[in-house]
Image (tube, rainbow, N blue to C red; front, side, top):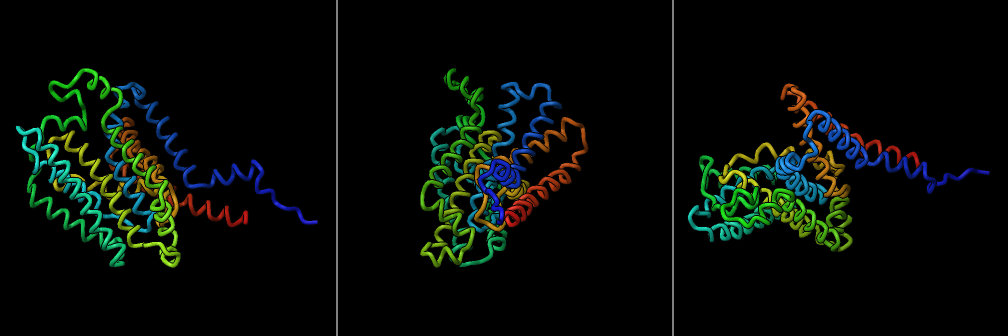
Length: 339
């Protein structure tokens, strides 16, 4: 008489969870937090937490956007250039002595963000050009427009725009808002907005279609899904998240820079991978892209507080990415053995 494997046993369920890519990401993040807390004495103070949130938020927003695109079967190499472009547009439209121009700048830049997403989406979804080629080309387009608007870093920003960074820096701000900003920084609110947007999208057909298209584009198309439209929408969502990051950067620096986003492009993609999102598409969680961004951000802090040469940052980050990529392979091997 043959023994049947009990797939519902607690041991097997635990093993299935341990081999999931998300588990390795959480373990690495916990280890990073513990190490940082040991090296940084004031790590758990409110001031330190707020400072860390401000430092991590831009990469988190870009990583979440990159995660959406990757899950849909695409890849965005233009995210950093788009971020730079948005800061240039914001600081070109705004005039320091005219507070209303801040509102105009937000509206115009949001429209530009939608346009950026649509252009990438048309190239990837409708023209069926490989995403790497499309976004590599558009990155130079966004860079060119950014340099035209802002040949050198600078520009103007209205005073109240600092609300996106630190309300306490805005003259005449209500004390209650100032105190709230000391505990709940605007950067965290921007991240929560991004999480809320994805939560709403994930509960709709579009959210399910994004996973279906990323898993198998041809099968999704044969099932009646407008795959081109889905990939376009994924690119638009990505651009909206990048737009949120641009609001923070201009609020923080009060200036625009056509090249300031360049280092974040590959880090955002790496963060999504570290967070367990499969490069092949269709698998992973956008929320865990946030975890991946935190992991890579903590690498910098650990290297700084441990007085280790900054040159090791790339090495450590690369090793973490390798572990994150290897985790899905181990999970697939484990799943195949169970089957």
